[in-house]
Amino acid sequence: MLSSRTLLQGAAAGLAVASHASVFASEKQTPQTAGDTEKTPLNVFLFEGFETIDAMGPVEMLAYAGVYDIRFYGMIAGVVKSAQGVPVAVEAVEKADPEGLLLLPGAAPQWLKLPPEFFARVKTLAEQAPWVLTVCTGSVLLGRTGLLNGRRATTNKNAVPMALKTLPSVRWQKSARWCVDGKFYTSSGLTAGMDMALGFLADRFGAEKADAVAQYTEYVRSADPTKDPFAR
Image (cartoon, rainbow, N blue to C red; front, side):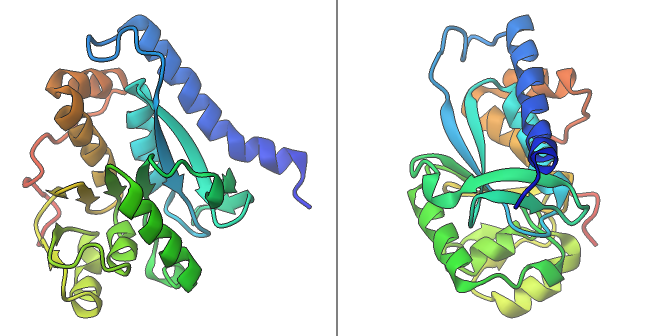
């Protein structure tokens, strides 16, 4: 039985982001979203041991855009803990909007040994989603569904050898902050997810939108997906 304290802790991060996003929207609405009332669903699919910043970094940026209804899901309803022990309250993935965007974080290799049912669900969500965003080794998880075969993608630089060996059909980019191939946005390690999220906003709503979010969050974004200071 999950305690009410644990559930409240898990929900706190999402509530804080939503609160900050509403402040941003009230202070400065962009022409693209001014007057809009219906938000686009965005499904964040979490699993035990996910990397905190992989999920919450992009969520922070996308929430400030004021156009997404961000919900957290897991294989079952309850609390999922990140690799850093941060508890997040999640809904059962069956409740995810099939037309929602998909955000899939990554994790250290020891956390990537997930059951077949997980990958089946990822594949279904990714096939239905208009856009799919992955961070770090989230692209490896997505790659295991076969949906990245023949496509350009990137991942955490330390995971590139593993990705090349286990998923040779994916066109892995060894030097990229993030990659775009069709509806798939894949980013390299950790903080690259925030640059990818801002790049995604720029592609959808214009560079001014992404720059406004970066300015408000006091984040120095990399606007060039090919500029990768961590590539060897």
